Length: 76
Image (cartoon, rainbow, N blue to C red; front, side):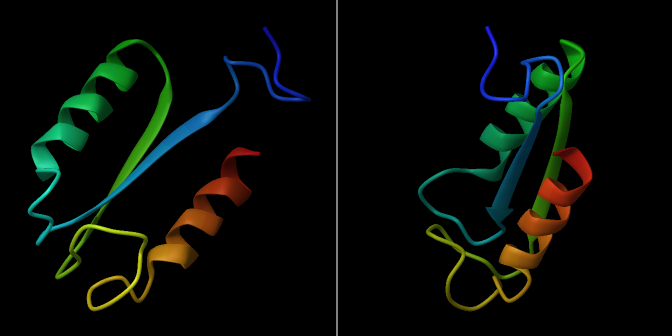
């Protein structure tokens, strides 16, 4: 199945986790990252020092959007 001009073989996966996230432990993203890479997918993870849970806002997320846009620029 294709999604627009991107096939499942082409798209990348990115996870961003804050070290202070109390709702989703960082180990969950690490497990997902390993599983994606083991299945041959392009996957990256960014650990935001001081970041909590949420929408990339607040302390620790100063570079969150930039990291995401850089990932997209490399992978689209």
